[in-house]
Length: 113
Image 1 (spheres, helix red, strand yellow):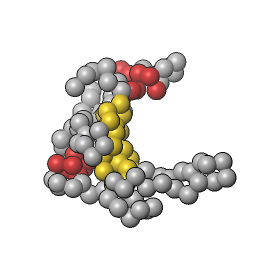
Image 2 (cartoon, helix red, strand yellow; image 1 turned 135 degrees about the vertical axis):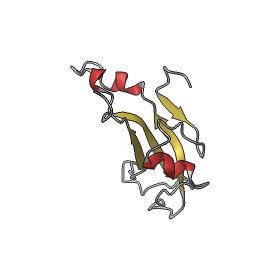
Image 3 (cartoon, helix red, strand yellow; image 1 turned 180 degrees about the vertical axis):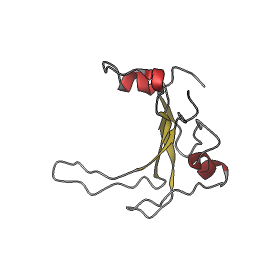
Image 4 (cartoon, helix red, strand yellow; image 1 turned 60 degrees about the vertical axis):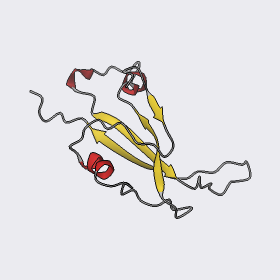
């Protein structure tokens, strides 16, 4: 893994998990097909498409007066989209929106002193 990496993209791939011990990891490690809700548009299975990596925090919070000494809060954000590449209905300007499925692996800050 590249520590400078911000986004990983691999349609129908597998995410790099931040932790193997939380409910998100169990969703991916316990099943050949992760327990992700179906796409509401196509009623097809959603699959892993991309994830935000921890290094993204540095860019997302650039210019903010935030200290990472207290932790980064999230370890990775996983995005799953329709395997069928479902397209929403478009408006008169050719724009359409759909809600995708996101899962977050949170950093465990409870063990910090």
